[in-house]
Image (cartoon, rainbow, N blue to C red):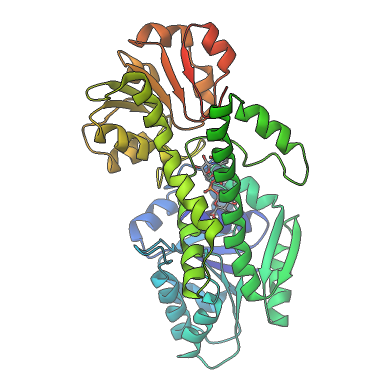
Length: 429
Ligand code: UGA
């Protein structure tokens, strides 16, 4: 099937490339001319394992092309995925201006039946808004479908190819058939719902995962007070299949372009409907406070952090990505410099992105040991597995004091303590 995907961010590019990989002919459209120029040359603007390989392979076969004009590709396609950004506004509301602009362009150029698919995370009711915008300039038949994406950065290609479920909110028979055809080659349970339910499933899923993280972080904080170990606790809890093992890693709180934005958007949606979503508010508050636990631990050790040299390993909001949006690591660095500490940091992939948002007082190094040299303490802020494989004998010699704050409970505390470090995890006995 011929398909257009509008927006070449994480979701759009992965969707376009993977749909081409499973046999469709895809045009990825973006108004950013520079980005399209680079994509045409095979330059992928984001670090996402496996994506460059898929893009190159399908582009070579002519199954994936890039364009700046939706108007040009529209007549040829049966389905259009809208995968443009929906950043959070200051009040937490999702900013839908890009979705609306695409809908307007579709409305002005559509000539026959098309399925328009909302892939971006959008509030309940957006499909209806998109429909109404198109109806302003086009009176023929078309359908608007909600098909939220559940991919995780760093695992996006696998998540697309082997999803737990594919949620399709659809109120139109012809559109349902087209959606079935699009996803026929992708294994994974297809769940058909109303458009509104599909839109809600996306927010509810992200909010629930965020709740799991804030919950285990609260348990971790309590573990510290009762001398229990949150790693043992989450393991013991997760074996209960009703609870499940995943998203029970305590740490410095969730970040990224999705959970913070989507939890505040859902809270905002509830507010506009006069509903006080108390649990979600607590999840957001707990997450914001969790960053502070690293600073608290350092202050307990050193008292004042002014002029203390702190090495921070990790800048990305999680491992396997170069994305620093809403990263807890970045927040912690800002908090540290805010109380006068001097920070040197390292990340295997996110150094360049971090340099763009951190002030020049924060030194970013291309070598983890360089960041650690002469520091008073080491903070692990991102769960890159390779940090656990560093040479800790060497690190002990490089540090002024053998102090590690493991914000991600990444290290084997027994081994690290045996090496002579003072080790502080999150919620560790
Ligand atoms: C998240 C969801 O997991 C995806 O299903 C969803 O499609 C995506 O948002 C989205 O809405 O686009 P992502 O933001 O890529 O994916 O990252 P996650 O792997 O979910 O991690 C989010 C944050 O939670 C990270 O900062 C991570 O370090 C943190 N986290 C995760 C924990 O602190 N503990 C855990 O146990 C798991």
